[in-house]
Image (cartoon, rainbow, N blue to C red; front, side):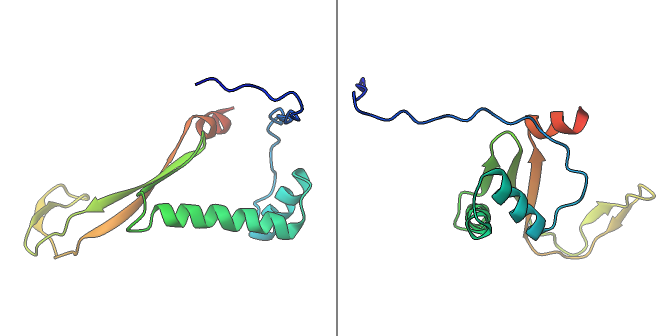
Length: 126
């Protein structure tokens, strides 16, 4: 199916990616909101709304009824890993000595894993 371009359509401007600038200080939530607002010519309230939306999408994705995974393209992948329950008396390896010992009972749980992707890895190296 081919789409025809309308003659009176306004072309959207695609902004070029901005070169990565090092951030010298650790950003608080307020500092991050200010940075987002300044770099995208938004108000702080609009930037806070964008950040809240991103937060809700991530939390919804890892919710028990959600997708179980969230990808921030190029930066990170958040996944869930189900850990099975362990019965009392199960033999486990002592990491300090290497000997086998009886472990305590543990209920089933879910672990959140965050994996860095290509852009984040290369930014840390260079």
